[in-house]
Length: 245
Image (cartoon, rainbow, N blue to C red; front, side, top):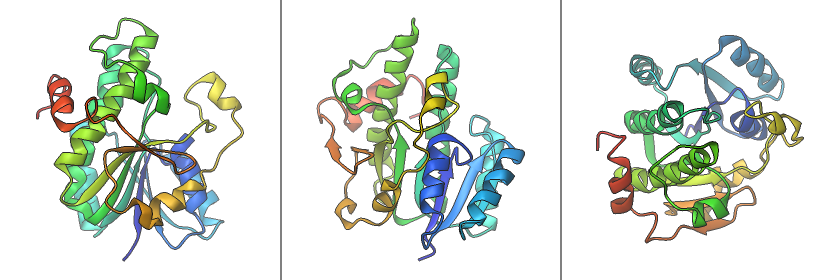
């Protein structure tokens, strides 16, 4: 097995923390970002840690950019064993929240299916476990708090949807990374944690074989989601408004 690990948002924040933690492992890191300068800087850092690392540039919100990326992965014969889907931005408004924090993830991961290895693992970064478990699933985004709740719960619905749609080839789980240093918000810049050692567990642990539609935290704890709240039928009901399903 090549152990090709694709990390979206791999040049900053959670994605970079995962890449740093895997740099000395027997894997091939594939970073996906939008900024060439940032990608090259991170490449130099990771290569100094003996990582086998490469990067691709793409805007996941743009259909042609996604298609070009998938085409290049096929040309380069990159069979992906694990995906860490870490892309996300502060939901300043409803449109950005929908496009960047939801629909682009669906389109990318379903289009990437042709490049996924059998028994591959997909981890979609989500929010606080207690919010996922107990917050209501909203269908409006009138305030910042509403948008934050919408993003976290709808990404968890996306996990449920993709766990069913990609289930023949992949397991799909949510992942809560904890407080990682990033430029996402002013307070997150003050966080000192810039690695995620649990990444190795997520890659290699046999305990995760067959586990899908769960939420896993930065300690490796599996949080099984309420099946009445997060299931394929419920996900389809809420997400069909935003996705061509």
